Structures are given as structure tokens and as C-alpha cells.
Length: 312
Image (tube, rainbow, N blue to C red; front, side):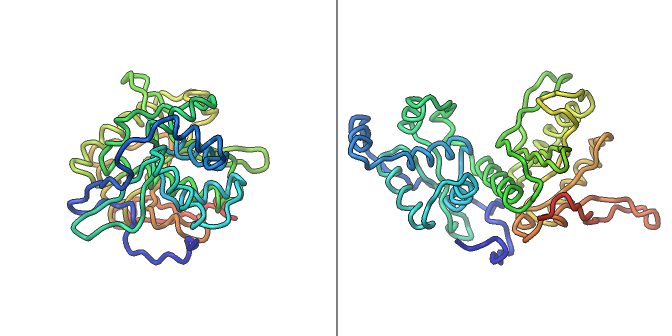
């Protein structure tokens, strides 16, 4: 597997591209449950396959590389990416999982995205695993899938590269009390060091159509959550740190501008920003950005605070 530091991409694979569409790359036709049960009985579908299903269920959409990294972190032995891809192909052929790729004016993407199929849900339910998958989940638009993939990458970066890593939540649930809305962030990480803990929550922002207006609505909910926060709200003992994961460096400035021009700053916390590609750095100590008002020019400038807690 290519390590993060070896990746030399100039543009995030999870950024949106002009005219991009999600293209089906699974299996057509019919596979019966009896056929699948037979494969389980003769050992063609094993506990290893079920471990794959559980992780795909947890993350909703995931690439094979992300899946391998999560399995390694969970201590699930797998010889190589190729071996994992063979198992994924078996699950595709039995319609337990399905697969998509993205195509755009720039061409086809180089990775595939995996998610559950109906048979996968039935099998997980049979083992008492909670599975909220619905057929409509697989028709989610490209920008929603890419938000999930970018969120996955961020969680994986923290759990692999931050010594203080404690645990992760794929989609932490937050409560905007005054608005009467419950919403989900795109990821959450708990860091613990010397008996003290801090929570990070991640809001992944993509440049989909009308992204600014959608982002403003999200920020209103975050403002509500933070303004009315009391200990143990949404399960947090203390106010979590909010981090925006943007497509690129320019996008960070665009997101910050949308916050300031719409007066959506959150007084109780600092707002930190990062990008997809910054998660590929060998250490995450200097991957966050904050916008600071320069007293001389009266303009905002980007600064990279070095946060030792994020080191190895």
C-alpha cells in the first residue's frame, strides 16, 4: 500500500470535479439468499467477509484503501491490498456489497467506492449487528459520498498519526436546541493525554451546487449547538473543537469568508480549518489553520498553529 507521505496529488481525490457523476460498477442480475447461505456453509464466505461488511456498514461509503487501513488499525490480519480486493470482489459477485466510481470531464477516478446491498443488511441483521442501510442510501449524490470519503480519510489520519488518539465516531449526532433540529457532523475524534480528554468534530465542506447557502444553514445549527451547550449535550463532557475540512487551500478562505460575511462566528471556540491533502502529512501537528486579524492591515491572514497534542 502506498503510504500517505508518498502521495503527490495536486488535487484531492475527494474534491468535486466539473460534470462529475457516480457510476455503477457492481453486479447486475439476481443472487438468492439460499445461494449465499450455501457459500457460508461451505466456507466461501467467512468471518473475514463479515468483518468487511461490518466496517462498510459503519462508514456507509468507503474505498478499499480506507478499508484496509481501518482493518489494520482494528488488528484484523490481511496479507495485502490485493488479498482484500479479492474478498471485496467475492462480496460484489454475491451482491452483498456493491461498488461505484466517479467519472467527470477530467476522466474516470482511480478508486472504487464500496457500500452495502440488501443481502449485506440481511446477513448483518442475522448476527445481531445494527444496520440502518436502506436502498435509497445508494442513490445519494456524488457530493454526499465524497463528504463521507473525506471524513473517513480525516478519521483514519488521526487514528494512525496522533499518539493521543482515543476513539472515533463516524457520524456524531448534535442537537440544535432552539432550532429543534438534530444533525450529524462528518466525523468525531476523542484525544486523551495524561488523563485529560478533548473532542474534535469535523465538518466536511465540498463545492457542490449552492454550497454556500447549504453551508450557512449548517453553520446556523452549529451556532445553536455551541451557544446553548451544557456539559453532556450530545454526549460531550466539554465543548468539542470544530474543524472544517475543505477541498483545498483556496476553499478554506472561501469557507471562512462565508462565515464572517454572514456573521456566523462561534464566540466560545476557535474555528480551525484544514484540507484533504493536509491529512497526508507525516504528522498532523501543523495541519490546522486559523484566520487571524492582522492589526496592521486590518485584514485576516492564515496562520498554522503548531498543536503538540496532534503529534506522534
